[in-house]
Image 1: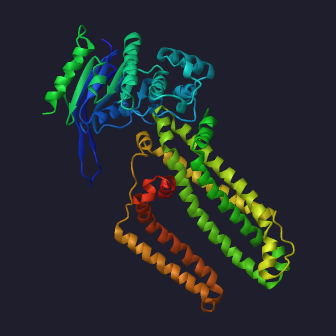
Image 2 (image 1 turned 30 degrees about the vertical axis):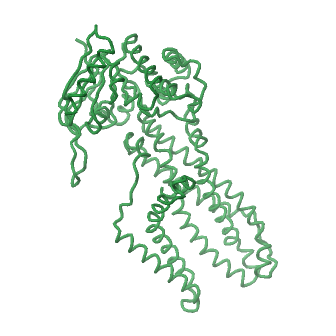
Image 3 (image 1 turned 90 degrees about the horizontal axis):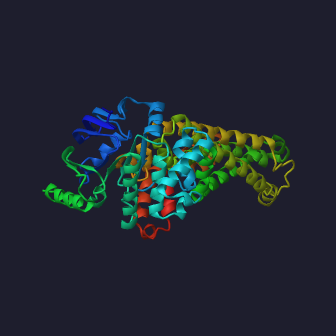
Length: 252
Length: 276
């Protein structure tokens, strides 16, 4: 059996230093994600979903428990190892794109590679490839201020994928987009997931975005309280309805 | 690429940097001007007692200026650091090694330092060419041997400023490399509050005012302390201004932020810059 892309065991996160008021954001989280899955994490604000994403993407360290990404124990990585791990294994899309305004789209996409001192030839090749997949080959010479929100997010997405990461994380990737661009981006993510078998895990509070996933984890008060699997035969519309139903009972 | 990132950062936020840079340029120009007077001993000796006494004052003046520069550069450096936190955080999240981040911070700080020092000295040379005329007007003498283009002054200004920027670059590098990426990335969203309790703030303000009053009193009654007037006023005035500024700045800025001006966003940037 393959190693799971994500394996979380007994994860706990407590915020607040000694002497300060403690806040337990995650109480006990266990889950696994196989390669090629498209997983959504849902929950109300304050439920701990962003905290969980930060732990998974190595941006924050757990108080206790284990997080393994592609077989590596994340909390044991330090310094340059951690930098290399981020640059090779992880792609991340932010809600607010986080493109560097002074760089062109191509240079933005190339950032993870340039920071790792990959050769210029190799960079050009990879950027062209990933731009092709995301349909932004025409935009490569543009600066971020010349792009629409949807285009920016596609550039950001290309940057997250250029180094062929083991997993793509998204933090409300459609949060800053209008509904048309959001739908386009989500279709694109689905396509990438299906065609290239890229594992995707995104946090969202929007049931429409979540309906593009294969599996949804609902987080409440620091626990995974429920899981919803999409049936292969199910259409997205039916799955969307199911999510809405769960959210309806969830709030009570 | 590294260079492009560093220079791109400067280019992209040139308005913010312009304010930072102009302050630094003016400060280094004034320092240069002082040094042309204070370090030119031939000029000081050849122009009678009034001028040589002025030289003595200018020596203290340049020490005072050095202190002010130190504090100002500290603020400027913080400003620089805060402007770039977000980008550096992002680089770290994308997998930049600490060494690379260190190099970037280093290059940027030193670049700003060299730029402001060179322009500052040039401006200082220009400004000091008006000094002879000013002396004639104020003291009624035609100064001999005054040199607007004075090697020693250039040396001292360059040494002080580049030295301070070097220090700043080292500090910046340490700060950036030690902070976790997520904190840097989100730093723009978190508001820094004053952690000073109100009574300490009040105490600082009182001490500041007291020192300022004492300083000006000492100057206006020079016969009391005689020779020590200048060093005494130097210490009291610097410390006094610092305390008063430290204690009142947050109160003033909060007031400005809530005022109508801030709501119109006209002063938004200046206020934000000052808060840093």
